[in-house]
Structure formats: C-alpha cells, structure tokens
Image 1 (tube, each protein chain N blue to C red):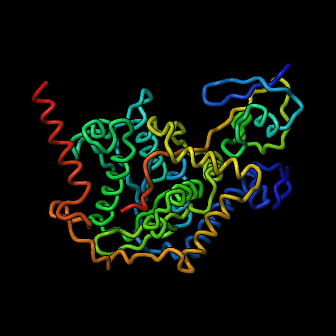
Image 2 (cartoon, rainbow over the protein chains, first blue to last red):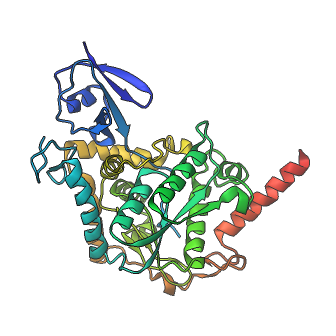
Image 3 (cartoon, helix red, strand yellow):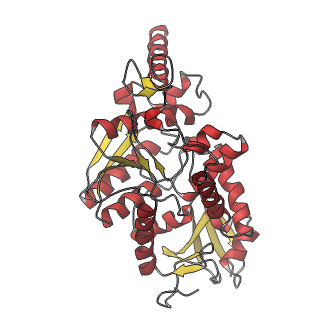
Length: 71
Length: 317
C-alpha cells in the first residue's frame, strides 16, 4: 500500500521504503522549501516513507511586499 | 537522524550547519542563536522599548515569542491591510496575532489601514499607478510609513521585524541583479535611526525560513500559513526559489551569499549613507516624516491621490 504526501491542498502517492528527501525530489518539490510532518510531528527528510501513512508538507516560503530597508 | 546534543530522534536537520537537533534542543538553540546575533550586530540592549512588526505569520510571531522568552520588553504592531483573497487573509492573520498576544500577556497595537487611511490595500492599489495589478508596492510603502510613525509616536527605541535569511538573500539577489547600490548600501541586520527614522533591526536575519517555520511549529504557535494571496508570482518568491535550487546542491549557499555581502559591506564595498545626516532629506509638509521629495512624502502623495480618486469614483457611481 503506497503512502501519501499532502502539499498545498494536493495529495500525491509516493512509494514506501524510500527516504522523504527522495520522495520530494521525485515530486519535484525542493526539500528546502518544506517541512515534513507525520501526525503533527516534525521529521527529518532522511526518514523512510512508511506504508499507508500520510506525510503532510508544511510550506515555508513566504513573500510579497518589498522589505523595510527601503526608506 | 539523531540529535547531536542528546542522541534522541532529531526533529530538524540544518544541512548548512551540519547540525540535527531534537525538539527540546532546537527550542533552546534558536533563542540562544538569536541572542548571539543580537549581540554580534548590536541590535538591542536589555531595557530598550521594542516594537515588533507582527503579521500573524511564522516569522513575526516566532520573533515575538523568542524576544519575550529572552526577556526583552516588546510590544507588537499589527497592520490590518484589508486583504481578503477568498481566504479572509487579513482577518485570519489579525485573529492569530491577537490570540498570540492574549495568550502570552503581550500588548498588540492594531492599525487598520481602511479605517485610518480611508481604503483597504487592494482598493488603494486600484486607484494608483503604483499597483493596479499587484498591490505589493503600495502595501510596502504603507507598512514602512505606518511602522515608522508608530515606533516614533510610541517612543519605541527600536522596531524589530521578522525578516529571515531567505528574505534577506532574496532581496540581496534582486538588488544585485540590478546593481541597486543605494539599496545594497542600506541592507543589513540593523538600519540606524536618526532624523525621524526609527532604528530597525532584524534578529532573525541569519535563520533560514524553514528554521523559523520549524520553531513556530515546535512551539505550537498558531500562525497563518497561507501566503498573502497577492504574493503568488511575486519576484521575491521567484528569487527565493532560485536560491533554494542552489542551496539544494550546495548547502550553505544562501548563508554564505549573505554573510559575504555583509563582510564586503563592512570593508566599504557599499558606502553606507548616514541616514540622519542625509542632506537630501527634509520633513514632509503633511506628516513630518523624512522625505527626499520636494514637499510631501511618497506616502502622503500616494494616499492623497487614492482618497481623491476614491471620492471621485464614489461620486460618479
């Protein structure tokens, strides 16, 4: 039974037994831009994807208005 | 992966530092590093009255939390921008900022732009050439003005913002692509205050964005994780994505880029203007804030025009 990754309202199926980092690379998601969580617990991306689980990816990039250095 | 301090399961791995930490040690590490940066760049001294610009997002709430934990006296300022974007963005971010302040027993000032200036940011953008498609420009102008006014009127010693290293590196990258030497000269962990300009500091300027997000998550801070609806496609995000691709191949690239810039600046590569002594600045005839424009400042001119056009439109309708 494959595992799932949930990212920005989308759910992706990923194979089990590979690392989270490899799964992210397969999905073309930069590992630097997300934090993987399992049941609300933060994970490092060397952890293996487990059968049947759902890993939620918290996006960390934000942006918009120019910074406050301008005066 | 194991925590380097205790050998328990790590919650975060910071490849640029070759450092993995568990929840408990990470929640100690980040405030300790913040204090180190505060001292290294002479940002704050104990007893100073600090105003933190709070958006309801991860960086500003995490910063407020850390400053509070470190024992600094910091009030918050939330600027209500009136952005909906189909997700009630401003209302939700305000709710989180207020809930955080309440649960921590901290003081939050709220400045509602529509109530005080006469239009929401999206409305304002529709009435000005500064951003009919994207309100980021008028939003930035307004936030900078309001923050400065609030800091000075409230007699705060310093204004602290939650800019992280990804913000700083993206700004640096953008200004380098265009060789905007004036902006490069002003960028740094501290912007000195003088002559009507509040001193500004960025205690999180050396933390990666994922580090501040991890801190907020591990501390259980309820922040708004939706990005501003108008940030989609923003140049700053495109620059961040570019830098993250470089970071993926070579961990530490973003940090090295920023630190090398600070070092080059320290050696005089970008002569820093003395803000208070800038001969081109004078007081705006309307609001009194410093400006290099002939009479009124950019904020007053822009908002006078917005109010005028809005009134005219309402009359026509």
